[in-house]
Image 1 (cartoon, one colour):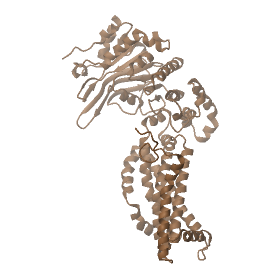
Image 2 (cartoon, each protein chain N blue to C red):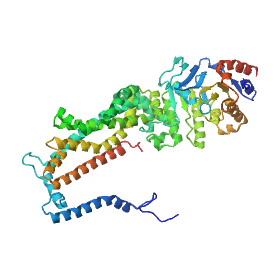
Image 3 (cartoon, rainbow over the protein chains, first blue to last red):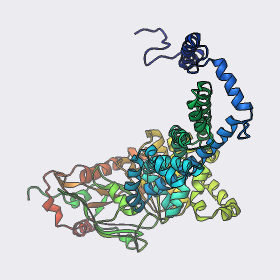
Length: 274
Length: 322
């Protein structure tokens, strides 16, 4: 058996901290370098080209979007778009989390609810959410509400099924123990099971952030006057990649920050969840 | 009949031991009473009789151990008593009232998940009281209730662990807290489902002494389910042995219950040394004979038509004569 320490290959690889950070950074750096090479080559041949803008062009455009007030709308585009998108996203996710929690918890705990709601919820969760977009736009118009409804429909049934599974996995011993301590059905659901499922709810929301952005960008791209998705689709008409790419990076950063906040909240609000 | 049915009489010949198949005389006012309880799981192809016409009583303040090999129906019986399942026929009474769904009359200490993982030890102990109160009412009244919970924690030597979560405790500490949580609600009977089964031998012995001390102090009625005969004989003055007699191709099972008044009273030294007493091992052997090593020649017909009270006549007479 080789006693040499392994840094990368093999199941026993154990790189030092600094090397581990290098591993983490490597794919990002690689993408940046590859893009830099492609962009440089492209701009050499097409000095006025818009498809692969340089980092400097993107930074300048992003700064303009973040600091210069739009004359027509009277707002700074990046912040107005960000606020509009986050409002829609937050409202949709919050409502979906509440509805999913209520449905999942009750289906998991009460056989009556399970029999009534589970087949229906399962069926609805199979529907490709984006296929509902035209219907939602026709019924609810192009305002914020339609986008919130799309996110709500896209996430609720996924979260409900997740919480249902989590509730079903709570050991029977705990449920019976709670009853022998005096818990009524309602107390069992909302004072015992609810706190037990909260970390999983936050985890389910974390996993829903990606799909939620997809629904939001799609709906904003089709029918909107403001929002990050709207801006990306608008700039697409002008092949304005110098705006689109920073916007995509901005969305990714926002999604990353939300994800980190949720992960932090699980670790700090629920220390019992090892 | 292929084989001679083992008669409880022969077991009464063992020194210092009396076997009866009817409830002991002082248990006429049984706190927990099972009357002709039968449990059959019906499948599409075949039915499984877990036990047939079980009758026994547990009197107030008694610590009774329920033993039996795997498949004898210990867990099923516990679920019936807890109200998680219904018997196919027969009656289960607690303090003269029929048993329904789980409620505060029955406390439970399971082998696993005895404590709520999202609550600290003190919160676990106070959970029952907390459930009795609304939010405002709780904020007003929690002081004395907290004091009481802390008294219980001190009794279990867990005071310094009050703010820890269950996963931060050792197995023994978790089970001590779970026992105290169940006792704090003052249930009519405490059901313990192999509570020390997952502990290492040393901790297990300490927990047995802890439970015995607690029981002798408080005289709470306890039904202690275990597959460990040594533990059962050490802890319980009376043992109920469930035997999966005469199982034929897993379709029919029938059981009989043997009431065994051990010589537990003579071993009150609260020391595991008592387990070295030859009478201790003798009793274990006797129970093993009855419940764990059934005569393979017994067929279902030997027992199907016999009610536990049928055994009782013989057993009681034998014990009287012996």
